[in-house]
Amino acid sequence: AGNQIYLAFFNTGWSLPVQGKETWGYVDVREGAHMFWWLYYADSSSFKDLPLVMWLQGGPGGSSCGFGNFEEIGPLDTDLEPRKTSWVSSASVLFVDNPVGTGYSYTDSEEALTKDVAMVAADMMVLLREFFNKQTEFQSIPFYIFSESYGGKMAAAISLALTKAVQKGSIKCNFAGVALGDSWISPLDSVLTWGPYLYSTSLLDDYGLMEVTRAAKAVQEAVEQGQYEKATEQWSITENVVEQNTNGVNFYNILTQQDDELMKSSLNDNGYLCKTEQRTLYRLMNGPIRKKLGVIPKNVTWGGQAEEVFESMSGDFMKPVVDIIDELLAAGVNVTVYNGQLDLIVDTIGQELWVKKLNWDGLKKFSQMKWTALEDPESAGQTGAFYKTYKNFAFYWILKAGHMIPSDQGQMALRMLKMVTLQE
Image 1: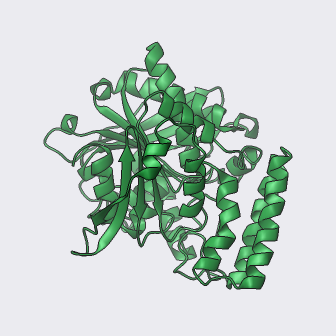
Image 2: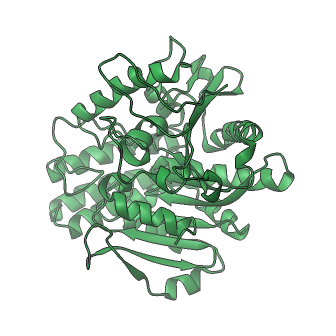
């Protein structure tokens, strides 16, 4: 069940301002597995004139309803002030705490946590089937999946499962495409390019490059031997080697220093936040927002199972899904890749490498095309991004942005959203 609200205030020291139409609720995707979703209807005289976007956070274990909503694209920021670059201005936005155990989603036991992206996709099919059956007004509206970090890996698998479900008629929706932001599609390509990227930006010397390369090769060896849990452990070791040789570079934006106040937690998309920001979001989600929603069980803490979610998925973490992108393209699904120039954890060089490995029949023509510059909406006359599109594939290079593009370049991210969803 969900609740629709137009206005909510609570005597908690935080006042929640007037909102547009919202609804939220839980779906039991399996026995003992409960997934939470939160929908904002588009700020428009008619939401039916605008697309529906589902946002998937990274991790696995990062909360869309928390990080994506209040730190990136939702109508309010963590101070509950209106966000000028909210995506709700151009789309209805569906946040899902995915996989189960993430954010407000929870499982009755650790055995019910997901193990791989196939299981994640199967759970999401249950949620989407119920969502579109109940919110029938969205069945004909163009539906896009936007994602970030590990969320992109999950989005790829979910998009393929959804394409098949729509073809079979088991889910009624107008699936229009998937957008993969700074996404963990080919983990090894990311890790192997950390050294060259940092070296080219003067953040590693020759000795540091040698150290990072050696650590990355250990990850590669584990992947090639099919030892994926070991590869995840080696990935973590390689992160430490990078930090030691760069005096604590921030994996999420190389121009900002990683200091003792930063609590990095894998790809959960909360490593980008300092302790103060994390505490603010934690208090917000477990305080006034929890009270507003009114459906969170007493024994559930927002983010309380995040580490367990990541551990449960550790055997799947370093596996690539490039083959799934090929399947999506072959099926005619619109696929967009977008990446932040200053991101290290999923650097653009690594993204370009896996794109070159696609078997897609349009790759040769795409590769021969010149990109097009896009003006920065916040700085007239300055380039904010480049993009290139051919047939059903597009790539956006977002300048002056790190891992969390809407946080770093909100106006540019909003323009990209409008272009991808054919609003401009």
